[in-house]
Length: 493
Ligand code: NAD
Image 1: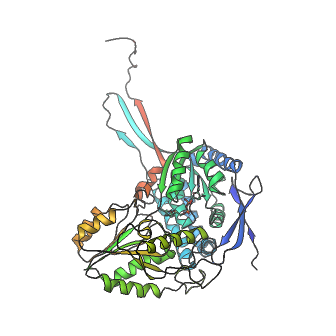
Image 2: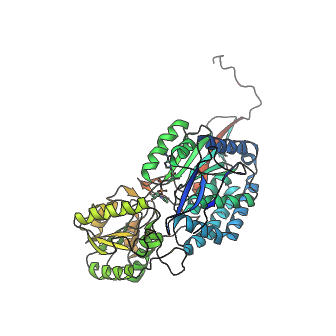
């Protein structure tokens, strides 16, 4: 029997319990046993964290020269590289994602801190070509203040980095709320923040439930900016909450990303890309390529190859180096997947492989790679985000038809096009209504490449050079350059 580990929150540079002393138990998705407890933050704890962040903003971080802030960001990057294995291990226990992936990702996330460190002292102001003689008007970019970063359970290190790194680089201070479904990784990350010597209060990590903790944070009157990643229903609460403190909001939400394979595509490349896109991380990825459109000419042949590949995927414990797909994160997800598959089959969907929970464990929720043929893409499994290893496959005949079908979904996060026709690849990239288009590849991220969706997938882009400006405000400075006194406003003529 594993001993249950107890963790504390990080507020104002101190490791603290919640003021109520209440705890949240967290499960290891490999076996659904409680492996850790974390504090359950309430309004009082949120208030302490936000006040600490505001104080740090006013007294240290907000006034620090950007070059100095950049040095701190590089120290975080160094800490991440040194501790990638440990963090990866914790994230795997926390989320059920493969250790092979979490440790590689923790290492790569360091690049985000280095990238934004590089940008920190390169954001410049402007001189406005003003239409008034004797006036000089300049603009400067200033930090916003306290940022609330709300993080979902998956890809926490990445989804924190794309918010925290630009926010800190520009002089903001941050309160991070970890997901109640996987709260420990970010508490361990807070230790690296401490090791990097970041002044107290600049970064605070709290753990709690959406209600009351998330709500208290996103309505707090000292919070000026909310950076949210999560599901669309939670996003609607966030927007309502922001009406209470009038804070700026960015939303990175879910997806039901379409992928098309034309008859001229390199099939081996497409098979690998599709497999990575939907079965990587057991499909628990916001950019999962979960709707597949196959050209009629290659439909049967390609689908057979894909099914054969999917059946070979090895399900197993996430720490095992041989495992290719780990467990689902929660019972709620399992139930949602089962409900959607059942409804799809009832409406004519044909399961070609997978389709029900694996019996490799009666504790963890292991779900095999599943492929469902659908006559139309309005069937539930083809239309709803399932956040699992479920691929819906549809047939198409021509380019215009598939463009209409790909765009016929409320989400618009990612998409994929497989073709050897360069011109067609470009045409498709213009026609698809999504924030990201992958051509002959899939599931790539970089600190340099903007990430985010359109339609119900949210608004605001994370990563990339522009995203740093989302953590600033423009201040306009008017200077009178005349030696003469201003004219009396009440003297006419
Ligand atoms: P979720 O929306 O349930 O929770 C996200 C966070 O919001 C959690 O920290 C939660 O505690 C908090 N929250 C819940 N209610 C709140 C409230 N009323 N006020 C403030 N905060 C509140 O999402 P999840 O289940 O953790 O993650 C899965 C979802 O996230 C999927 O829909 C997925 O597509 C999406 N996602 C999107 C991206 C992206 O970048 N576009 C990346 C990863 C995940």
